Image (cartoon, rainbow, N blue to C red):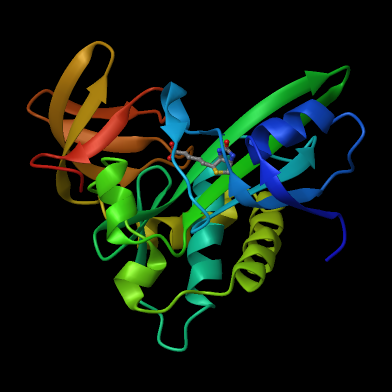
Length: 241
Ligand code: BTN
């Protein structure tokens, strides 16, 4: 594949592209056998061993920067589905956690670097491909699992990497409005009770829709309100989903 960097070991594929984005071309994708200091959303770390597939793709001035993580989530669902003759059900937990059989198999972290007139967007994706149960026990991630654990089949890393990069490029080039229907069809939260956790506290509501701007439309006894993905976590009322 063109514009691809394959490393043996890296601290974080997102950090790698952040450091080099001025000299690397639009569409450049990086992956590694192992990532030692992966970063997750909201300042969390992202645990890995060789069973986790880390990758990041660089976009220079993409046409639409809103809802990139949602579109990326959709792209990852499509790519994972292609790895199977009989694909499992692959759904999204708003805004972008990829879920197979009630477990998180992928996390997405998008970051920006501004250089002059150029907005560099780094789309970072970590897929749990082949870790075993012991890995998720030791890292205390009870809601996560690998594709191998959930399906009994471990997709080939190179194949999955190429498929994800292709689908992400395709979805990043598309406006969210064109992805909206497919995105909503994959969302598992709709018409479910959710707990919205933010720095100002928790709120229980029913997720009723996704607005055209990607916000989650919720309803409680005071009426409808919209939640933006920024700094909130949306969970089920009794647990992760
Ligand atoms: C999340 O918190 O759910 C997002 C996790 C994102 C992890 C990926 S792994 C590849 C890329 N490099 C990083 O340091 N983070 C992302």
